[in-house]
Image (tube, rainbow, N blue to C red):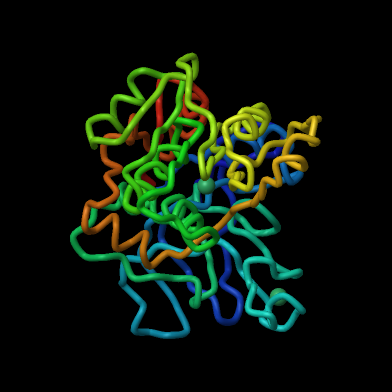
Length: 315
Ligand SMILES: [Zn+2]
Ligand SMILES: [Zn+2]
């Protein structure tokens, strides 16, 4: 089958068909989204080699549960053991033996076919487009934040970053508080949020300090320092950026200000799918360009440009 592979270089090539392990489904991929994490993987993050991609919509071709065959699905990316310490503590995202779709020890979805444990799959809501559903995984990551921190309608929230994840986070937290501003560097990206009625500010604008919650989703190692500057004493900073770049920070300030810093990764699919099907999270304007898998190398280059938000592959 054809796949977009990283083996030191990003390239389209022919690879063997994946074979589902016991409990796994074979999925024919329909659409897949290129994510910031994919780009970081090609810069050395996780020492990854293999088929990239973890955001997808597909059709089940083969599964232990035959009711799933022929169904359109999306899938959670962490494949877990159910027996380790963290699995038994019901923290399966932190499974010690996990593989992660297209990120850690498991081939990804920039390919004609992929495999995932059946238990990872969610049926796709009928009326939602394939390319919209590739946002299920990153939208779920945005919905992780209100799971970790209660957000009250009176809370003042600052979201740093107007890229793929910043936009989703801003939209999801906007459902909780209207006292929110998303800070970015790109006028046209911020304009998409403004159209939805969401507060925006340019990175060079003065931004009022003392926010209750600051979400760092810049995709850059410099975002955390800015977040620590903006948060109030005893406020919360949520970190969404994963990068290969090490950070050296002056950390006395958060100590003195007793700031809570929370790392935040994968989240719940159910509210994400609901928001995508209800349109309470609107992702269509974020799809900047769409390519066929055979043009994957070009698509991957384009995904690294600041001229795009989301690049989608049709498989
Ligand atoms: Zn992603
Ligand atoms: Zn486990």
